[in-house]
Image (cartoon, rainbow, N blue to C red):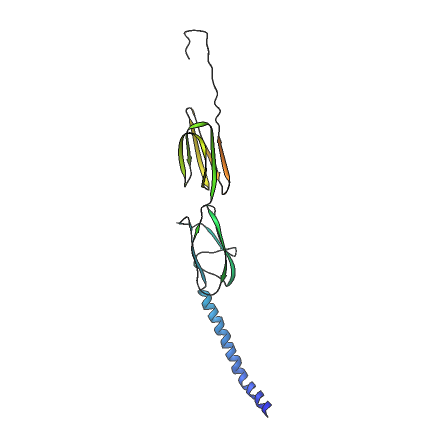
Length: 194
């Protein structure tokens, strides 16, 4: 008799148990969806403290913006910019907001090497973030921010402009070597002028 009553109770409670299981699954799905709405990655990118709006930010190789929704799990976050050093980090994401804060990229630098032979009367080097004017100079070698630089050299009767691109972690040369000649005049008339 006991075996029949156990089977009877199971047949009676099975629909209730299945209904409870279905409600539990639906509640779990709803909770997951609600929490995923709040799962976001918040960050801002700067370059040496200045806001940077054209940085390339990716999350597992896909473009991402600050405040965007993200998926759960392990991911790779990457920030690149032509004027800044690359920033990369591995993230393990769970439900909720994730604040990376401000990502301040370090400015990329290169070496500019300018030589003037003979020394220039004046030498002007201009870039968007750095410039210098020199007189009676044979040049300089300096670590400068990566960018395009205009170099202008002047002599009493000669001047020329150059444009060079300084790239990260390399030396960019600019050799200024004007070709000057000498002129020797002579005459055999005492009243000749020149």
